Length: 216
Image (cartoon, rainbow, N blue to C red; front, side, top):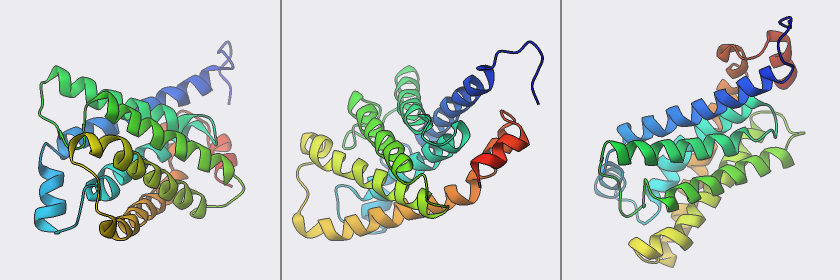
């Protein structure tokens, strides 16, 4: 269905806006759902997992990827939705934390330019895997993209962030954290696969006929 007189680019612009909005909502939810210290307490004091990196593998990565990959579904395959959502997620987190002067994790450098860079790496990795696996069907496509992007995020933290805050990870802890990282990514991918086909219709940005084309 086409609205007479409407720009042919309007539907795509609406989808892009929707992807940015989804990322922003994810950033706000993450900011308020996991205040300073909560991730460290849960990962190390409650679950007694090694670190650094358990919180990235099991909480930050899967939560961010849920919104990143759903945004990609909204925009359309390999259309930049993952990158837009990743940037929106991190920038809204940063700006809101600064405006409200909310305390954030120094160890993970949440709400800093390094946090934005880390989520950008995650978004680029997700976008790349979605492009490379565009011929695969769900849930494999979402799971592979989520696992790969979650691994890229964790490796970025290990090599670029934690050496500045926490220090180098012990090699003995790497295998367990990588397994947890893959499990977290796989869970996010399965959830996205279950919800992804409904995103275009629920959003109201595209017609039923067009959303059916994306999910075949």
